[in-house]
Every structure is written in structure tokens, then in C-alpha cells.
Length: 209
Ligand SMILES: [Zn+2]
Image (tube, rainbow, N blue to C red; front, side, top):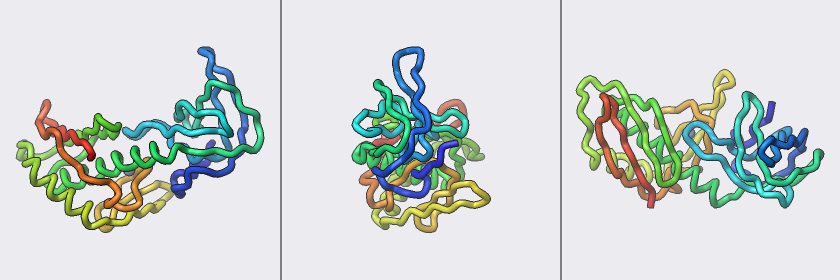
């Protein structure tokens, strides 16, 4: 089980212990650390990249309770410095945090977010369950999100019965394992590129500037 330090800290560098490093059948090396600052791919968010010592981390992924760090060179077991690409982290956090706000805005219109994809350039949130069934006006949602961003609402992280919950200001909490901007003000301007119905679900696509 990997301790997920990124759950509680925004630090992008620190120390860890490499517990094991295993060669993959296709020429890569996967390392298990005792604790990690790297966010693995999941929850609609791409993985962090960065370095273990001087070795680039190409991808990070979950396998049950273990977080694996993939490199193209082996790394020695024992203590090591780890560093997350801080610019990429901030970008992913902005896209993911924007997804939260779109989710909240959809809920105000009676929709329930069911699926989220926060990859830069591909952002979209899928909603279900509005009895009216008509797509809301994109400009109303955009205006709501802009107000929350202008309010620079602080991020709050809580653990309730061991479950991580993330909220901005007094907006509702979402159970979430992702990384987030420290305030909504860091997200920047969110533009909805399309708001449409697809097989009874509402699909909201977005971009950041
Ligand atoms: Zn989140």
C-alpha cells in the first residue's frame, strides 16, 4: 500500500523510499515507493510526471492500493529524492478544479454529474437525471462558474470515515482523489465549448484560457 502524500500536501518535491523496482515485459521499470507525491492516472485526471532522482517518471498508475511509477531506466531501492513536474501538476489541477465547478453548476440546474474527463484540451462532464430533460443555457452556467472563480474560493480537504472529500468555499463536497487548485481564482477563465444532450444525458465540454 502506497501512502498517498498528494492527498494532503501540494508539495512537488520531497523524499521517499523505493521499496522495489520491477522490469516490465516491454522494457520499462515500475517502482513502488513507500509514499508518493505523484498523482496516478484516475478519476478522469491524467497522471503527474516528474523525476525519481534524475530518472524521468513517464507515467504513474494505480494497482489496487499500490501506486506504480514507470521509468525507462531502473532505479535503486532505498531513499531517493522525488520531484513532480510542478507546471504540469498546476495545469492538471486547474482542469480538474474547473470540472468540479461545472459539476456544481449542473447540480444547480437539477443535473447529477456521473462522469468526468479533465484531460487538458478534452474537458467534459456528463450529467444525468433532470426531469425537464432540456440542456441548460450555456451562458447561465458560464456566468455561475465565473462568479465562483472571481470569488477565489479556498479549497478544503477533509477525511470523513477515511474518505477524502474536497470542496471549494461553501460549495458541496465531492468525494475525490484528484489534485486541485488552492483557490478557484487559480483556475482562470472557463469557456464552455458545447452543452448538449446525448442519449438522455447532458454533456458539457469546456476549455480553459
Ligand atoms: Zn476533485
